[in-house]
Image (cartoon, rainbow, N blue to C red; front, side, top):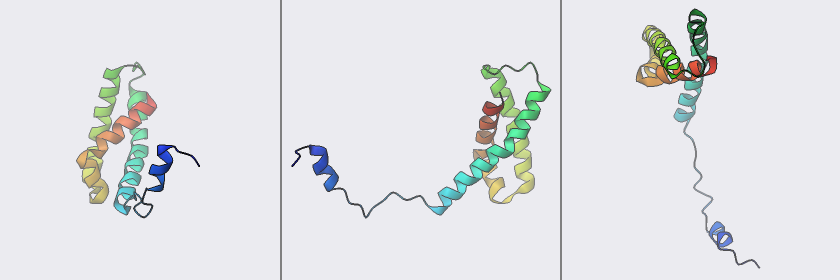
Length: 104
């Protein structure tokens, strides 16, 4: 028989209380991923219009993020609903940041 303390502690873990993810959290995560995918063409368009943009430049990343976030906010207002609410609550900026990091 082993005398490791970790084995004794493992036997006392209650398996009936798993950490579960709510359906709302899953839906929000899915919407955030969809927003990021929708932002990629906007970021690519920004990059195409700014061929001098440098991949390692924080300034270029910030400018790209701002431009894409503005376009996302305009689209969010037009669309409304849950996706519009997610964009207006900061999801558009997060998606823009992810998209610009991918493109730059």
